[in-house]
Length: 267
Image (cartoon, rainbow, N blue to C red):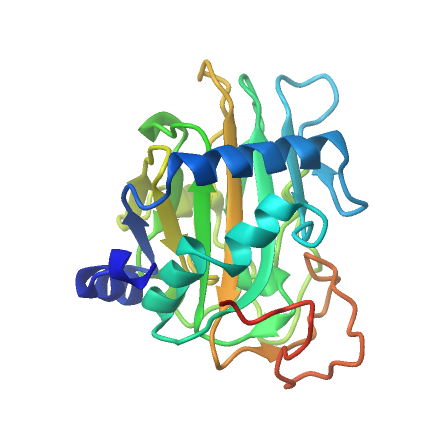
């Protein structure tokens, strides 16, 4: 609900592109989302991915856009505390739900989440947006999400890389550039670690550069459901590559409002 978001949270979000909201989710909601993740993993969609190479340790699974078939995701995305948090951070009355994303690293997973920002993967433009990263397990500093504070304000958009092998989607594209060398990003002085407990939410902007280690040296898994929301300035967009999620146009043209059932306004 919006009362969980203070003016300090909003200022941090606007300045850094990332903020942690502590102890804002109930144990009941966490249990429901855990059941939703189990249902998702037992019956993945056609858009699911396995990012850990054969023969490597652990498992890095992801899937998205299952909120219409998994009731727990539907309820969490459209009603209650999560859309309220998005509304408070974005300063809008009713944020529009873009999609949910399940990200599971089982214990001993060697595969990291490489440096990237989400905006170029998505077929939507606009600066009013937020990902609410909801951990269902404790996330200590050793496996925590890492974000480069302020990178959402660099005015740069980077060609996406494949999570499987970290290759760039394409060689070049107007308006986009290649990510800096990972070593440069690793040494950026504005990197912040964002450990989280169950019940916390890490909120970050679609243009905030972020990464996360594997769980190779961690004795437990890391289950996350990320809920993505957009504000009033969101417009449909095309990219020079297949977007992720690979939403078809379904009659939308670049510049159109996302005013259709796939992207509902929240309650």
